[in-house]
Image 1 (cartoon, helix red, strand yellow):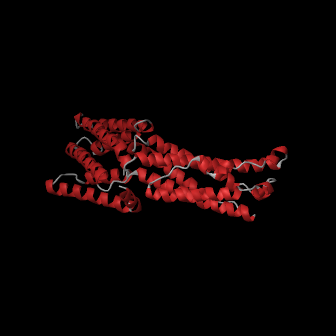
Image 2 (cartoon, one colour):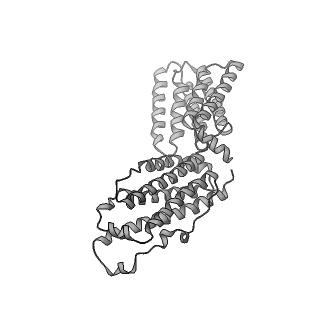
Image 3 (cartoon, helix red, strand yellow):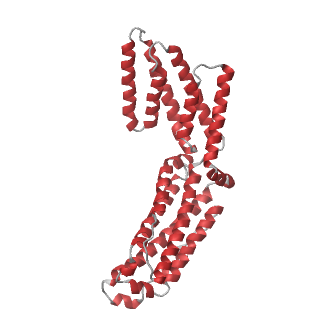
Length: 345
């Protein structure tokens, strides 16, 4: 499965197109073989489902809502045909009322199902009270096409949100390595310029969007995935403070530059990020204990405690930021190790 996950991520769009192609081919074949009326509604349904739910987790979470919403909407829509045809105006009044009511519930817990209810009511009964034949066939076509689309999403080159989620974690770690190396070089040379780390924020935003899908794909590991992202956010916060502060203008600049072993420890930590990124490619993570990270064993020289001036503020602040990045890095390696140790690919 490891090779497939890389394949599925690399060709995500192509595989999505292929799944849609297969689903539409099946639906068109059924329509032609059985000469089903109003077959276009089946095609519309498939495109709607597969275009809005590309990930397996999304399919699992929304499949039940879509099917139940379709059934409920169809029942409401078909019930409107119990009214006498002469009450055309009443048909449309109740239709509007039913759709508006469904829209009201789209802001609640079952928002997706409520939206499907509203759409189905319009599809089934929007043609007026004289269109019962069309209403029945539209309902049938929406239902069976939804089943075809869901099956194609589940069994034909499925796209797992978890694979994309962890791929973003891999990219996050690589960027952290690059930014940290660059920052260390700037501190060493005294040629400081603020580093833009907005790409890290973009990655976290994308992972946040994937979380609802990953939780449905990995029920047993959903807490681990959440903790992984929370740790990434902590690293992002510490790096952001470190890389955006103009340390060359701080009173503690000389103390930072002169502290024995600090630069070597910072480079070791940057190399640890690089090593972790390579381990993620193989999905074999070796957890890093805190005592293995030099940054967490560095302490200010004893004579520093005898002084108390304004330069200590930035000096100790800089040490704390680096130590906190190291601590969160160690935690991240343990979380990733635990995840890959329990998940079978």
